Length: 275
Ligand code: COA
Image (cartoon, rainbow, N blue to C red; front, side, top):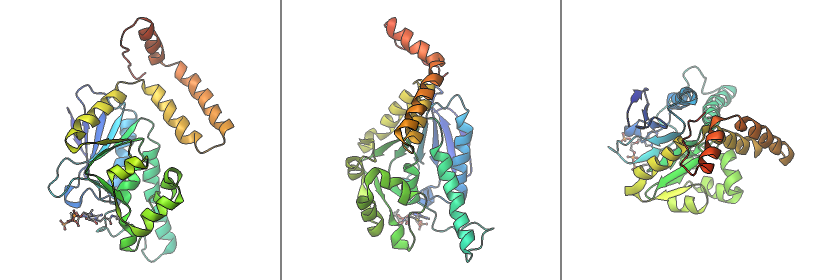
C-alpha cells in the first residue's frame, strides 16, 4: 500500500499499482462502531474516490489494529447520543435522524465502481447493514454476522429490514432479527450473503487478489453492469432491458472495449485503462 490519507474515523490507502483504494474504518477501541460522523465520512470518502482514477475498485474494511478484537464493524455506536440538533422526544425529529443515516447508506450503495466488503471479525447491526450496500463480500472464517439490536430494545433500521429480505426471504430475516443471535461466516456463505469464505490466514492476500483484478478490469463495463443490476432489479423486465440497451451503447464507446477485442484477436493479455 502506498499512500495514506487520514479522516477522523477512517484511513484511505491505495495499492502499489494505483488501481484500487481501501477505506478502513479506524475505531479499534469501539470495534469500528458507526457513529453518525463515521457514516458521513464513508459517504464523503466514496464521493471523492468516485472521480479518483487510482480507485477503479474500493475495498471497505475494518482497521488491521486488533487491540481489542477483529471487527468489520460492531454496528451503530451505542455510546452516541444522537444528532445534537435533533430533539430526542420529537417523533418527527427522530424520523429525520433515520433519514440522515439512510442518506449515507444510500450514497454508499450508489457508489458506481465495484465496492468490496472485506469482513474479518464482527459484522453486526449497522455494520452488517453496511455489508449489504456493497457488491462483493469476502469474509474470513472467524467472522460473525447478525442483528443484536433486539437485545438492546431497538431494531435494524439502517435498511436492514428492507434490503436483506430480497436476498434471504422474510422467514430467515425475521429469525435473525427477532432473536438477535450471531451467525457464522460459513452460514452466511451458505445463504449467499458472503461471496467468498476464506481461511483467516489467507484473507489479506485474497482481498488483494480480488481487488487487484477488479482494479485492472474494464471500469466502464463494471459501471454499466453495476447500474443495470442495481436499478434493473427494481423495475419491470421491459424497463430493465432498456437499461441494458442504453448501457451497451454507452459501453461500446469505451476504449477498453477496443482493447479487449484487439487483445483477444492478437492473442495477448488485454491492458485495460479504465477509460
Ligand atoms: N457501540 C459502541 N461501543 C462498542 C460497540 C458498539 N456498537 N460494540 C463494541 N463496543 C466497544 C465495547 O463497549 C468495548 O469497549 P470497552 O473495552 O471500552 O469496554 C469494546 O468495543 C470491545 O467490546 P467488548 O464487548 O469488550 O468485546 P466482546 O468481544 O466481548 O464483544 C460484541 C463484542 C460485538 C459482541 C459486543 O461488544 C457487542 O455486543 N457490541 C454491541 C453490538 C450491537 O449491539 N450492535 C448493534 C448496535 S445497534
